Image (cartoon, one colour):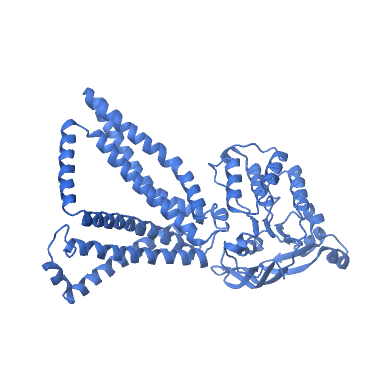
Length: 263
Length: 230
């Protein structure tokens, strides 16, 4: 059922994102061509349009994450979605996965668009040099490189997921009140994110008190060393983000399962 | 075993009690009219049975279970609000139902859409009444054990109303039950087996239609007007 839900979620979201991403790539090509011809005024307009489009895509990515959950589950469309014979897990995960995939796809498209616009001869040469240097670094220690890359990807996905799940949690918590649900969700967002920051600061001071910080200072910052501070930092971040994700996920699940109140 | 059973069901919105200590049973194969004026708690009751609302106290059981994904597979629910994604075409939403409900009868759905002359347009371009018809077709094309229909004939024209009522009767499967809420009693009186009168969140009457006609000597509609006289 999860794949079916994701299929429909992609259908619903791609009609918004695909034209925007196509426009972005097209615009960046046009920009690059204008640049090659050396037309200053159209080039300035083209750049401004691209920047506007990029801002639009970033804002829309956030808005869509909120809107899809709120509209599809907690507004009128919820009468259809929440009466489907599917588990609450499938419902939440379908939204989360599709949201994360779109954020990654949008990020990738932005990178591609920027690369098209700055694709000059010397940027190519420099890029090649960087790639060569990176290649030799990887060759030194391919195992650690793979581990490092996977860890970073996992961390990015977990960070995105915890952010999205926090939005879902705030929206589902708003079902506890009968009026001004939007305002309540907004307030919940600030309260929870502040509480998290306080908890992180608290954990930090405990670590300092226990002498962990001193220990960490003695660790060297080396990319490939498994015992270096950078490795430790990534692993702690992964564990912390995974914990936050689980916390937000199960709280949202509890709300949708036990406290659903569609008005 | 009753297909739908409510025990001590109470629902509060803030301080306001929308339902108070509702006890009821719907046996398989019955068509039950849930009748009451606006705001009497009809929609709230149906929404609790579908799991869209959480009761404050008590519980509703469908086929012996509290509302969950298993009960949702055997309940076909028609809400009173439009719930279709406006950007979809009629064929998209039909495919959606076929994808998620194993009891969805595609042939029946397409027949009904044809009979109601609904073309395969984007839902956004359809009128309010036509959208309601599409929703009703989707809900009635399922071969469910329990149909919960909230104001199924409220917004459609009299000709479509007749068609819909006929559909409900034609769809009649000896195993399936229908609970339909409405205040348009005259139109549906002839299809009902039982009636439940809801008044300010409480059940004031729960009996077979024939019994009511015999004991009160009047039609359901006439008795309704007497009970709910303003």
